[in-house]
Amino acid sequence: MIAPDFRLLDHLGRSRELKYHLADTNVRSIVLIFTGNGCGKVQEMVSAIKSLRDQFGPQGVLFWMVDANAADNRSNIVAEANARGIDLPILHDRAQLVAREYGARTTPEVFALKKVSDPWTTNWAVFYRGAIDDRIGPSTTGTTQYYLANALAALLVGQPAAITSARADGCPLTFNPPQAASYSSDIAPLLQAKCVRCHSPGNIAPWAMTNYDIVQSYAGLIKDNVLNGQMPPWHADPFYGSFANDLSLTPQEAAMLVQWINDGAARGSGPDPLAATPPPPTNYPFAWPASLGQPDLVLSIPAQSIPATGIVDYRYLNVTTTFPTDTWIRAAVIRPGNRKVVHHSLVFFGSDSFFKGLLGFFAGYVPGYDPVAFPEGTAKLLPQGTVLQFQMHYITTGQAETDQTEIGLYVSPTPPTYALQTKSAPNTVFSIPPGSSETVATASYTFNTNVRLYETSPHMHLRGSWFRYEALYPDNTREILLSVPHYEFHWQTLYRLAQPKYLPAGTQLICTGAWDNSPQNPENPDPTATVTFGEQTFNEMFIGYFNYAQVP
Image 1 (cartoon, rainbow, N blue to C red):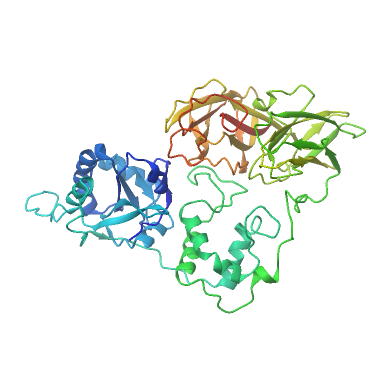
Image 2: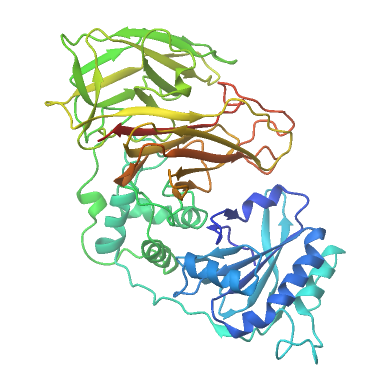
């Protein structure tokens, strides 16, 4: 059985994905142990599981526990782990997708995986499933079959397991009842809410959800992307904070969607909402965002010629605003003229802006950017005659290209309650060793006045692995405001808090994160390089941007 790929967060908030370890020659096997809080059989086997980890871990075997019980949550999983001395990662299968895909029924039940290859691909495959051994109670007295240990020992010497399955006795997994879903009433509206903003004609997704037939033809891909966490593109850990622009599927929505696909992705009765109410044929960045409309003022950089190949140095281009007076701006949207070559763009005040991107910016465009108005009650002041400097990062496509990027400015009809500011916590002094799977960095910013925090946006390059924002209050208490366990360079999100966060004067905003310079990182340009700070994507950055306003 080919093991379905998946990505889950463990009880400590770290991202775990099967596929990541396929390229790691030091990992020979991954053992999944389905578990659940309060199960006596699991508690009896904790010592045996840890012993197996200690025996086989140095030989390239990873042990992951997976909790899919309906009643369990991150907090009580952590409490149970601490109480039982469990020091293995416990992956939380919130939507029960992994347990259902693997057919797990009992806790503890194990699935031992090995790598299998054909001329085209390498995958994980199950080579043993079932009980750990045949003991009756916590003691090994009377144990005659060490199923998992024997299967792993055989694998490590290149032999097949003598026993490939054994009945697992323990506690039944408690599943939420499957939800019968209608394409017309449930699935299509869900896709409209979470997916169609990108999967529409002329937009950035590679295919458009225009009707049932299209969705049905891509059903397998949709399922795979939900299981491995690629789609929808939202990367914040749900354990920390609540966000107004959250695109993620709830566990119930994910379970419903995958169950509908597993049941055959039936059309059923009723109208097709995707066909009946198609989205606009184009949207941002191919047009100004429909949610904002036409800007009050559009400014363009001079036309740029981009060579076919090579590295293009950052270009800094100045444009002067034409408002007759100081003007409050409620939204500022950068629209690339040629999305194929515009990697990112930042716009600053003034004509001498080199490295100002480390401190803050007026407006920005990065991969995955979703343009919205500034937070309610805020605006940015644009003084009369301001020079806006565009920092343009271009990439080459193999053929000569041109670009003329624009910025659209939307005027606030009245002065705001608060003036919005963009600042950052940067770190530019670091060195990432070759092959390092985790090099940690920190940066911080201290607020000297009371502030209201609205948004955060981490920025790293292709080796970025994870990123976290934490508030250290004047009384020395701490609060995690945002955790991104799996940073995705191609989807750099501005995380807007559902409710602005009041931070008293003296609060320190601490950013912590890490880079992955290992060969297992599929985005890594060169695992053999020692990497330092730099503007190009084969260099690295560590910047924690945030939007805030000073308040009484």
